[in-house]
Length: 418
Length: 165
Image 1 (cartoon, rainbow over the protein chains, first blue to last red):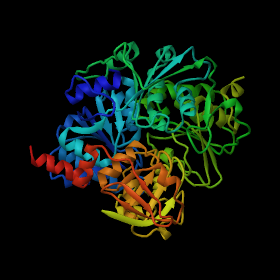
Image 2 (image 1 turned 30 degrees about the vertical axis):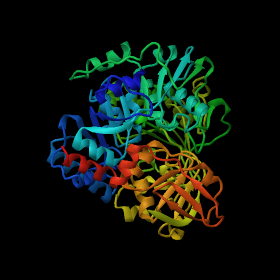
Image 3 (image 1 turned 90 degrees about the vertical axis):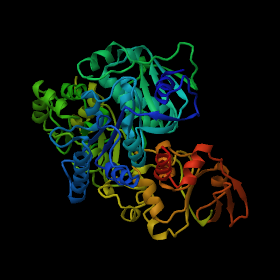
Image 4 (image 1 turned 180 degrees about the vertical axis):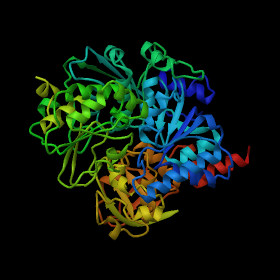
């Protein structure tokens, strides 16, 4: 069996599972947020169950429209807060919260070998830790909160092998945009993606979170990494419960194996209106920008902010460009503060915000007007994603976004860092 | 159960952001969401859709976010089913869980135009284009999915399961 199959078999109480098989899997963590929890709470009530199955395996995070952007969103956050209090569930509220997929690994709430489901499509982020993590809807989450298990169809797995060494300014974001550009937004539909190879071994944990995060953008059910020394080091200080590390069998079969040589991959930019429209940044000609957003569950970790600061240090955001930088959690914010990154951002003319998903989905804190163009380190550039249907979003890594904020147009960091 | 309605046809990768834009996700009442269904891909949809109508698309319908608001908005707008080449997996789960029927049938999509009237028999997956007279068969559901659908969605299915334990 491969990695996904091993984890699912163990959680279904079976010796073996095969792609296409329907199973009931025990869940280790169930997540929802201020958009998806209200429906999950309503459906939970309909089940007629009075208590959730295990308060230690459920969390709710208010991150999308908080700090509350309007009265209806305040009502949604209030519903979650009250439900969590009633049930004894941990609720991450403003001041303690972070963007859910930055926060949960950082707090040690998701660990290798776990099955994690979340009412948020980017739940696949935790695959970076060697967990089987996947996004579902509110009703699925309601049922899992009541019963502790969930139905799943075992997915086929596509193995990706990344050979070679990463070039300058190239990281997890570039590898995943390149991959989606190659296989398309439905290239891994219903499948698990297993990311391997020597370039992946070299990649930091933050880079791996970025890659796993965007598995869904290729239609993937999960995006998994093998547990290595970097993973162990990351969780060592965070884990406060037992976990199991699974490894794929050496002779296991995959639905497909796709290999890349990363040595010649340049920083990537995905053009509107699909993450699959990936191109090397140097082939993006003369695209002027009105806004740059650096943050999100994709690129809101401290390494991302370090990259942005490296570019913004001793530079100024170009007049006419709004550069919005959003640390992914309070801890990331604090680290950025103590490393002097926040000072660099403010001196460069960027705005720094408390953690929120905000602009990524056109919620608040950076909504685009008609005709405006934004470069963003987020994960989706669909029509109207960040505001007006007449606006455009280009996806890139934090260094490219920061360089573009300085140049006022989409450029490679090398153009600014001469 | 037989469904009948006029077709609204779209292309590939119709994502949840255009089905129900995030700016409307500060509420979750289906009727309120339905007022903005398909708004960013077809601004006239809500004015033209009638109870029973059918959405058609090619590959990967419903890709993007996990928002259950997307199938809820479509269902509450009066749409009786969605027929596509393929569906994004979270949207697929959500639709089945809330009782919005989905059918996979590329042949029907290829041989139907916007505005055609279809009759769909959910029992056997038969799709009849009343405008052209042609008939197509949708891909059958796996047994487990049929059980879920027959129960009336995941909550009803789970209630029965909990009652037995």
